[in-house]
Image (cartoon, rainbow, N blue to C red; front, side, top):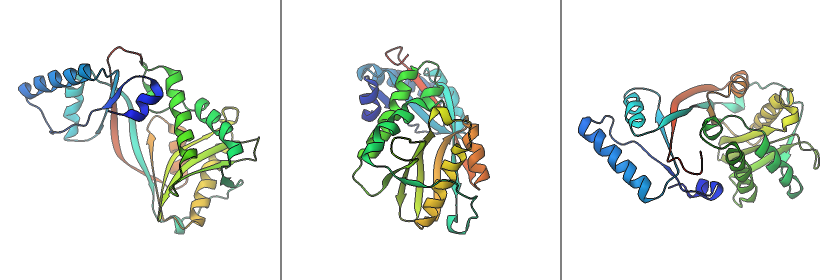
Length: 247
């Protein structure tokens, strides 16, 4: 069960994790029966599943398809090692830590700016719910009371141009979520946001940066490639729908 998404969407959501590398005909039949029973028993409207896009997991494309899953997205991990020794492009803007006066603007940008990701890519899922999820994401990040979650912004209070949610643990940073205001898409401010984030992390002593990205988000992939990231761990992302509220 995925209580966080269920709370946002207003209906039960689950994740299925594969076990065996391969199912014979009898096991395939049992898998489908047990899966469908569990979904009905828990009144699940949507179930996600992610598998590596490589052997031997590729056979699960068939198993999941037989159970009613469909492919909605492809993911990649982007990594930058040795940040301290990296030569970064000049940062024309600086990021600052978000303050309470920024929160509404950040949530608005998050709820209006995204077009990629598994929920936006799923043609059976309602767009307004996918948008709502990103708004809730940054709201939770801004409310976090730990030293790991950090939200930075570009621009002064009242004129926020973009934001970045980043986690920092020791010398490793995870780039979680970033966006510029919709009116600024297609400008150089998008690149500036990413470059500025790397300069900030370099100043914090971070050595390694990781992030997950939708392979359909080619604009951001190009930015990461320009900044020296490498890509690995391709994966396929599936959704199953009951025909309930998410469709």
